[in-house]
Length: 410
Ligand code: IZC
Ligand code: ZN
Image (tube, rainbow, N blue to C red; front, side, top):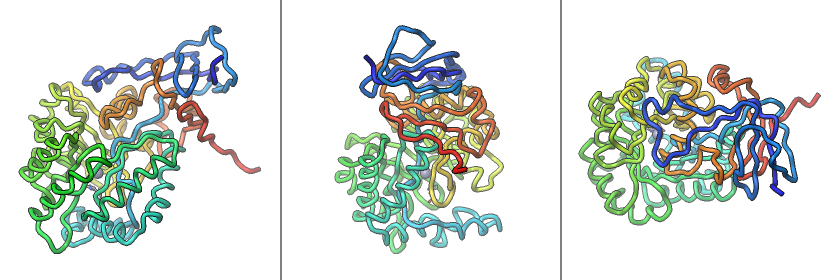
């Protein structure tokens, strides 16, 4: 006898399980099974497909004609940090741009100050609230970056908070060391970068990836290459914040260094985009950030897809350039501003997001961990369409219900 059956599913969304990310036209291909069911035993999927009488289970969950998908994967967040930066919102609207705020000691450096001041427990409490909200919005895998400590003690503090969150919530987390995220006051970029490279030996045991912010006024291409080479030599997979604002060639560098992902890419070159086809690097696009920074030019998702690249989507949840932990909102912006199709969007927040962070999640094939969401929506295209609200009705982590949407108290 199996543990649980989910019956009466109007449409079941089944991204294809592959050992490589989906690329180009493959991303517009998504299996949707109508009148479906899911059978779970021991926290794993036994069956996910058309309704049949072949199975029984101790417990039945009635999906009431709603739709079911794998739980979402958010492959780029800065969820662990101290404080907030609401005072920058009006400044940005008055025309003071993101890099100017950083140059003046605000922006990331403001969050660094607040993160250094916060205790481990305070950071844990604060990030926990965001994690709970992410789970409520259907996300059960989260990548989490350091990068607001900018010294040994505080980078380790951030990474350890991230690891404690993974142990205390029903989610999978991937932890990324982003020591070279900004240059702290009172030092120069070379000295600081060397310090962060020296830290790799210590952080490699508590993090999955090494990341760097390659941008004008932050780290150059040459510095980013040196850091990525050092991380690769130590056996860490690398990631890069590439071509977010200025076209420095971060995407080409990511591919050269066999990065698992290249993130942002708003200003990426045509050469870089065409190189994605023959690489293992996933383009993680963060359109919520472009929206939040008030820019007109969004990442060229269509160009990447037409060149057979692999695209994923993430919130980039952080206190400065994208203050939302709702990945459904990003799905809507991707539809509206990146001109991605609903199928591409679903693949981008499930199977391809998992590939961008080396996770096995994002699919509901036989034997997969049973991480799934029952969505209160008439079809899968509806979720990016009806934007800004939460459509998650029930969230199931490793076969256990961890969230059911509450109703009114009247
Ligand atoms: O705190 O502004 N882009 N890093 C690179 C960020 C945004 C986070 C922040
Ligand atoms: Zn980021």
